[in-house]
View (cartoon, one colour):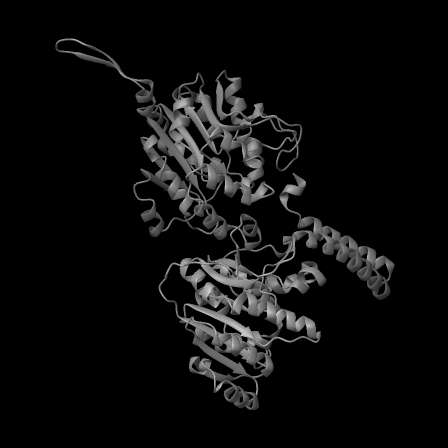
Length: 602
C-alpha cells in the first residue's frame, strides 16, 4: 500500500498505511504442543518458523517431554518454554500459561492468540489472515467455525452449539481486560477426557463472549457452505480450505477423509508446502495401515533412478531346503550387477555338499561368505534369526528361502512372485534404500493366491499372540490389533530390511533349538512392518510387473465372499451346532463393525 505524507520545512508527518499498522501490532502467541511418543515433529518446527514474525512474544507450552535435542531444534522460535504434564489437554495448558504470564502483562498486548499443533501449515500466507481479520469490526476471531447441530457432541451425542473451533483463537485487548474472560480460564478444570474439554470449553467460550456483547468473526465462515452433512468442514471437507486459501489444515482431516492421498495431491498442486512433513508425521504417529492410504508406498519393478548414490553394503541370507529352487536363485544372482555377500543356511551336511558342488562353476560362488548348518526348527525365520547377528552390520539385508507348497502350482507361482518383486529388481531395491534413509523394510505385494483365491482374513488370526509378542519386544508404540482390518506383512516371510529397523526383534535372541521360539513364528512374519514402524522407519511394497485390473478385485471378492461364507456356516453348524454358530457369527460381525474406518459412521 502507498504512504501519504505532509512535508514542512523542518517537520515530516507520515500517516502510516494500514499494512504497516497491522504489521506493527503487539501480539502474543500461546502455542500448545503434544506428542504421545515424547517427540518433536518437523511440521511443528516448520509452522513456527513461518509464523514467528507475526508475534512480539511466543510462549511454547509442551504437554509432553521436550529433550535438549528438541530445544535445539526450537532455538529462536519461542521466547518462553513452559513444560507441563498433559493435564486438561490444550485448555488446561492455555489456562496455566495465561495465568503464569499474568493479567497485567497481557493487558499490554493488542491481542492474544491461542493455537495448538493439530494442524499442518501454513499452506498459504498467515500474514494475509491477520491483515484481513484485524481490519474487521470484531472482538475475537478464529480460522473456522462449526455450525450448530441437534446431535453429535463427543461423549454424549447431544446438541452442539455454533462455535469458533479452538485450534486457533485470537482475542483482542478489550476482551483480555475483561474480568469474565479471566474467570472463564480460572474455572477451567483439568479434565481427563478430551470429550469433556470439548463439551465444557471449546463449544462454550464463543457463546459466553457473544452473550456479553462481543463480536466474533472467522476467516473461513463455513456456515455459508452448502453441504448436506452436519459434519464440520475443517475435519471432513478439507478440500474447501484450498478455495479459501486458509493457511491451516487439520491433521484429523486426513483421518476422516475417504481418500487422504487426494488431499496430498491438492497440497502438492496448489501450495508450496513441503508435503514430506505430512508423510513423516503420519509415518511416526499412525500405524502402517493408515499411511498406506496416503500413497507413495508402492514401487513398480520398472522404477528407474539414474542418480548415483553412495554404495550400501548388502547381504542376502538364503535358507536352502529344496535344491532345485536353489539353482533358480543362483541363475538370477548371476545376472545381478549389484555387489552383495551371500549367507546360506541349510539343515543337513548332505545338502551342504550338494550346494557347494552346484555353485562351483558360477560367479556367485565368489559372493558366498559362509554356509551354515542349522537345525530344522523355526522354519526359514528360525534359520535367519540364528545368523542375524552376522548380518547386523550391513546397510541392507535380504532374507529368502526355497519355497514350495503341497499345492504345486501355488508354490511355483509364489516363488516366481518373489523372484519378480524382490530378487530380480535388486538394483532398484538398493537404490530405494540409498535414496531414502527412512525406508526400513521392503516387502512384496500380496501374492495372487492370497488376493483372489484365499484372501487373508484377520478374524482368523490369533490376536492375543500378536499382542503378547508385541509387548514381549518392549515396543514403545501401541497397536490396537482388535480394530485392525488387515495386517501389512510379507506373506511367506521374504523381504529386504535395514537391521536397525528390526532392532527390537533382533535383540530378543530367540532360540529355536529347544523349540521355545516356535510359537512366535507366525507373529514375527506378521509384525515385521510394524516393528520397523516402531523404530520410526517407513516401508515400501514392490508390485509385480503384471497386475489384474481392480475390477477383478470386486468380481472375485464378492464371488469368494459368498462361497467362503456358505462354507464356513455349513462347517460351523456341523461342528458346533446351530446355536453356537449363531453366537460366533454375532462375535464376528461385532469385530467387523469395530474395524470399520471412522468415515463409515460419520
